[in-house]
Image 1 (cartoon, helix red, strand yellow):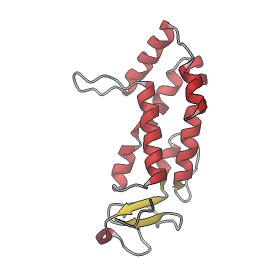
Image 2: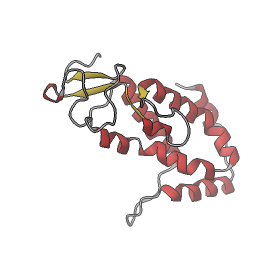
Image 3: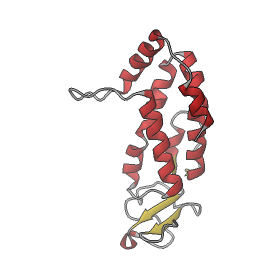
Image 4: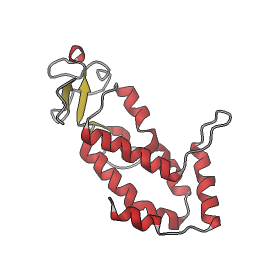
Length: 165
């Protein structure tokens, strides 16, 4: 259990702050009829869950799907500057902690800045889990061959059944 979570739960927001958070979240609302915008809690939870999966199991889908999988971090980047200052200050350490864990579970693209806007999209999972038939020794597995650079040595490719428990 994270002590920061207890601290966040103990803080009460005003009605105006809740309204401002809801308004900010409309920038990432799904335009399909009847879809509700995500909550700040759900975006942070999705980002944390995605990061936990990378830490524990690696990533088992293709490169384009990976960028779809980290949409929640892009959504947080859009919403964050629109949130009330007090809400950002309350939740910033939580976001920073998840971001650091994500950095540890991924490697940066060679020759690209590792900070600034959209930095999370310029990283790849440290561990890729693939079917044995998709693995090519020393190169990207199937679904990742579109990457604009050779597979870094720090990116481990694990075939099904080889994932450490």
